[in-house]
Amino acid sequence: MSLQDIENSIRNVPNFPKAGIQFKDITTAIKQPQILKEIIEKIADHYRSKKIDYVVGIEARGFIFGAILAYALGCGFVPVRKKGKLPADVLTQEYSLEYGTDKVEIHKDALNKGDKILITDDLLATGGTTEAAVELVKKTGADIIGFAFVIELDDLNGRKALEKTAEVFSLIHY
Ligand code: AMP
Image (cartoon, rainbow, N blue to C red; front, side):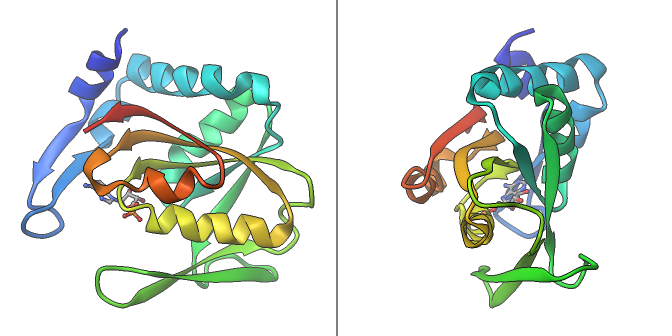
């Protein structure tokens, strides 16, 4: 199984959710058992030696990859969710969208100082969403060891800001 096979399994949907966007649909990839396994194994192989304590996954597609990746790495999974979804005490971070702002949250007691963290999502575009997760993790005192994405849209240069914090690893580049 090659990276080309994984790339071929991702469906491109033009003009979703609005005109001009080329939406990278991972549902066609993850429904194939061998592709799902390869995606997780390739990312896990890259980070296995780093002794990660927790994979932090960003709602919603970051939960799919993040939880399986945590299992593969033998570590725990911690969700970063959109505002108002987590039940206990939370830390909140606002971030910019194309129009207006949104907020993401993490449980206050989810991470501890010195924990080694891998942050993951399905796709890196501008990096705004992931940077909000970075701010949340930093507030807990945990250490960000790396970032993992299935897909990176190179032209949007989201990696630039993230690389100031830690290594950025993406399987597929467009
Ligand atoms: P950004 O904050 O700009 O890096 O956007 C990343 C988030 O938006 C991720 O959670 C992606 O799932 C989603 N996203 C952004 N652009 C696309 C795209 N072209 N196709 C699929 N998902 C996207």
